[in-house]
Length: 370
Image (tube, rainbow, N blue to C red):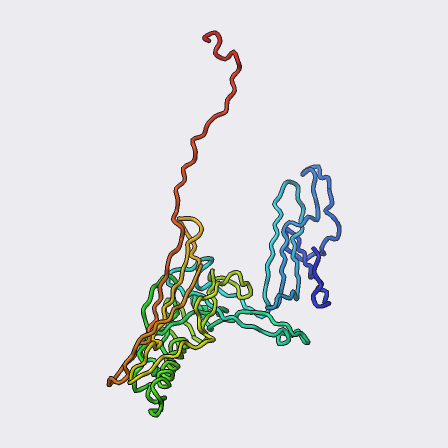
């Protein structure tokens, strides 16, 4: 194996060998296996690598920082299976438990999301570099409780509003939110009262400016909820939410943040753009943002007995409505609609062809009858 040179830094492999029967560290052999003739066991090959484990440590930008090899050395007398294992480990990450399934999503578990982040290489230790790299960041800090042990999760979720008032801080915990759970359709939201909206409005504004201000408040409450689950430790999960919304969803719950092929973009996400400006006239706000519809497509792979759920697509649509703001005690419902669509191909039953025989008979096989 030839190790590439990165940034003129040569990586020196760390080699460690163990004796097969005792697991005691020994000096790694520097020559090919030796052949020994044993009268009782026949021919014996000594100093043979029975099992080899490679561990490659790398940074988030893909630079390899360490290469380790561990080998079990022993003697063999017959045919044996030589085992090789390779593991890639990213620095500054902790081992976590698969909280939403492994490898496929489990029904009722949160879907995993992340945000796109463009980072300059100079901020990652590459001094003098003007290049940048696209990385992914978690959307939330999460903890999974299994048998009383809480493990952090490095990815995130897609959280939605889960009832109550949008403008009221509940017990200093923020708005009530829930993660989108795989396979569970949902219709939820919160209510914005006109009295809450009016504290941010100058009555000298024209109605178009006022409607735009209303929409900015609704936009922030709809796409940036902050809080905890409405039911503490529901289904064994204690989840602390952040305001970040995902740009990507993980195909599998165990997808790594540094593997872009394991993530799919969410279509029609407007995290970095504002929605269209509503039109205001005589107390009406036309085409005002009042909700969000989330469609998630998934497919089942593997055996029919125990299929694995994989997310294959996601789309986010926005709901607009015409609201009359001159009503007393007006409450506006800000809604989230979540729908999961199964796009698994239909199972097909295939019948094998009837076997036929190719048989050549001798020329006198039917003699003397023919």
